[in-house]
Picture 1 (cartoon, helix red, strand yellow):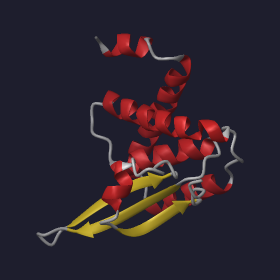
Picture 2 (cartoon, rainbow, N blue to C red):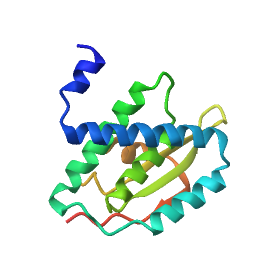
Picture 3 (tube, helix red, strand yellow):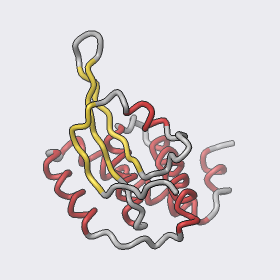
Picture 4 (tube, one colour):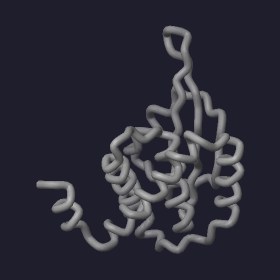
Length: 156
C-alpha cells in the first residue's frame, strides 16, 4: 500500500494531527539547525507560560498523547532526512501545550565508554503510568541539563 493510500484511510482527526505535527516538526528541524538554543529556550518558556488550561477532557488525555506520538512519528517518516530527538521533543511539547496538557521537555547528556558525550531530548507528559514510555527508561542514564515546561500531574 502506498503512503498516499494509507494516508487516505486515516480519520479526519488523525490527518489534522499529522499536518500539525508535520509543520511543527519542519519548523523545529529548521530552528534547531539555524537558531541559537537560547532563543529556542526562551520561545518555549514563553509558549509554555501562555498556554491555556486543559481543553482535552481528562478521559481523552492518554488518547491524545498517543495520537501526538503517532503523528510525530508519521511526520518524521515523511521527511527525506532524519529528525533529531530535540526537534521531535519541541514539536511534541508544543502540540501537548496547545491542548493544555501539562508536559516537560528534558535535554540531557551522558558519558560513553570512549569518553565522548551522547545527548538526548525527551518529553514527559505523565503518559507512562505503567512504565510504557521508552524515553523514560532510557532517560534515567542521562544527566538533565535543560528542563522546560510544567510538571505533569501525578498518576492517579
